[in-house]
Image 1 (spheres, rainbow, N blue to C red):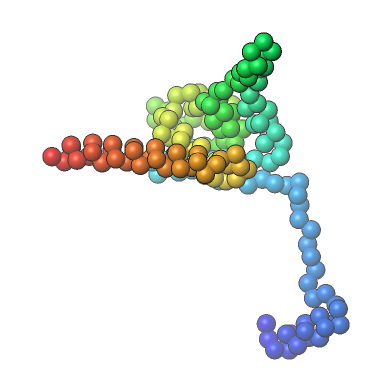
Image 2 (tube, rainbow, N blue to C red; image 1 turned 90 degrees about the vertical axis):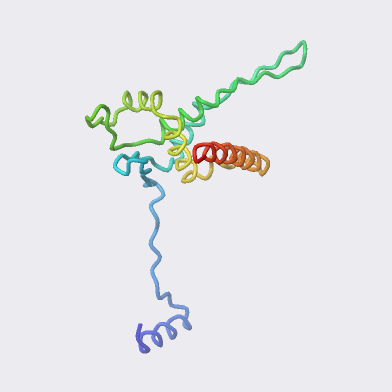
Length: 170
């Protein structure tokens, strides 16, 4: 801005006149997508940040049943960690550039389910990590202890891989 414009804005602001017009945001149009490039640097998977309706759909699919046994007072909770990840990716993934036996695979619910069943867990881990990163509400239940446990697991895995690599180099 030039000096004259600055002076005019200062004069207007000193008299209580707004120099900017606020623009309302569209809170109904939440639609943000991201891509995860796969190791071949050609294939990719596209996912979205979940809106409230999609969040509810995912949470309802992941809802765990809890039963109380009156006689013993024991609580029984059905846990299915694999289903949790599967349900999250079913809701979040929206498209891809994937090939099967040299032919492009169109994105569809059926093909998505097949991909989630048959893809390498390493690839699914990479995709899930990015989905969770871009949906921070998914990490609300994570404790510092959970993170420390994951760090310890990764350090152990690193140690094993380093030892494995040393064995190959000798």
